[in-house]
Image (cartoon, rainbow, N blue to C red; front, side, top):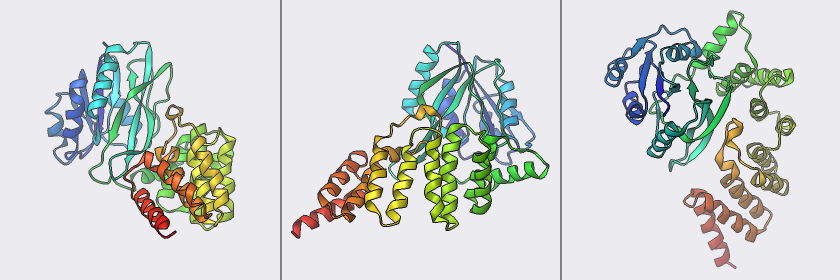
Length: 359
């Protein structure tokens, strides 16, 4: 059985740290916690689970802090969690089974990261992250923000997931502040960081600046395929917010240059046509979304609803606007197969019942 060092960087996490460690501590062979300047009970809580608690002066660089935590690890693999992450019971069992069977020739274990949820707790946004990294083979974190370890050697996609459960919002300006400090001192952002900088500008409603950054990122042609696809969609969002509707569709279509169509982009194109009162064209794109194969292992951000529920419920709207009530009702029932208790599904059922009663 392989051994695992759980390595965490924390700051002011007294409200969530114990929850995280309760879900993961017994699966780790050692716990290394690096505190970057807490002013609450974080360190006291950490010391209830491990005597390996260290201090690290925060430098506005997540990669530097994580590399320090990993440098203290003594076991076969390093596993990272954020304080507001948890391992659910089924994922704890899957991780334990992985520990018992993992081939030590594997350098990187990828695991699903579930970060978005609907009102019923269903996952609405997820992606794979490097979760277990073989120790002492030279793999290091890169990036002051949205830090990453580039997978190398033999890579395994695992069956366990980490669930991200925030109890409170984090500092919404932190990432943008770090990027702007880097740029102010003359640092050049590598392509992946350039993409995320554009995304942070978008989140801050600085759409003109975000569009400029994303356009340069795409035009330079140095980005990873999944970041390129996401950048096309995000650039389209910027253009829409800026009132440049005529440029939205070309940006979304540009995502097809990099790989086969993604359901996320198809749904956005469908929405664009539906907003323009062209439901017959929207039908084409929502139908295409239903033919797209979901492949989480490609590494990009995945919106599960785009591969089932969303195109079905929107096709219900499209067919209804076209006066094809029968197909509209059929699509609503297909949507119900994905989310039987969704408010939209129930509303549409009531509508179709009243429609039949009035005939």
